[in-house]
Amino acid sequence: MRANLWLRTASRVLVRVARFKATAFYDLERIARQIPWDRFVSNGQPVEFRVTSRKSKLYHSDAIEERLVGSVEHVLGGVRSGVGGTSRDLQPPTDANAHVARQLFVVRVLRDEFLISADSSGNHLHMRGYREAVGKAPLRETLAAALLLASDWDGQTPLLDPFCGSGTIAIEGALLARRIAPGLKRQFAFTRWPGMNLGLWRKLTSAAIAEQLPRATAPIVGSDRDAGAIAAARANAERAGVQADVQLEVKPVSAIEPPESPGLVATNPPYGVRVGDRTSVRDLYARLGQVLRRRCADWTVALYSASPRLSNEVRLPFDEMFRTTNGGILIAALKARVPRLA
Image (tube, rainbow, N blue to C red; front, side, top):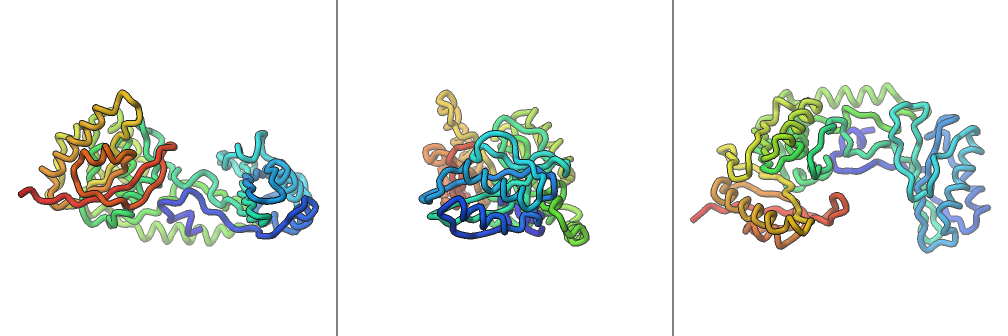
């Protein structure tokens, strides 16, 4: 419960259900029928299994899925399996209605060892519930939070995003600065589990609300030259309950006016993936570097980049914090300190 409520960068929380070895389907069926499926599934509730198998005698994922669904039906009776498609195509439950929402199980088989886990989250944890309006190239909430946390930003210094798009970095910064649990405004799969302790869940959410700060203590500013993106950012900030904590402005990067005291510039500039964009994006990175060196001395800069050629145009001594992917594109999270001009 706490993990789903508070984790800012995880995609989902899996609860271990069983671990065992099986080299034949009759072994799999026998052991699977002893698993306490009724801890995670109600009678008549659909189930889905996402199966991967490597270096194992039981390698056919669809056949493994079929046996596991049968074991759930044996234990509970009346359980409906998920919609069609192979186990690799299965998606987490998206229906908010408890009587039709599917329970997802993730099954990993490696060298004949089965590891079965129940998805306790439901929709991916980046789906906080506030981002209904998105820009052209939206950044997932978990990636925005990861950039802030990796930069050691604690909400006590100003935050500036000069390419804010639909406002995700600024909003995640406001949630972090005000100690707002990211999972407060959404539903989770575990709340539908039989025997779920609703009283404990209410206690945890009430305690989380009590920990919130009334306002962010430092300025949080987001800007973008796209007026439509800023309109979306304002709508998202209002749904997140932090509209009073973020200042969102329509302006190009060359016109940014950072707060006086040093803080963090955290941003996700365009990646320049399309061939026709490369020259203009390269110029954009160079302009960003010029503005930062001229107006943000002693600030820390953290950004995502898909190309060293582009990040080098900023002309700052970046260090790599971590690598990840965004929309299937490999990106690096970079961090640098802006020196004072001589």
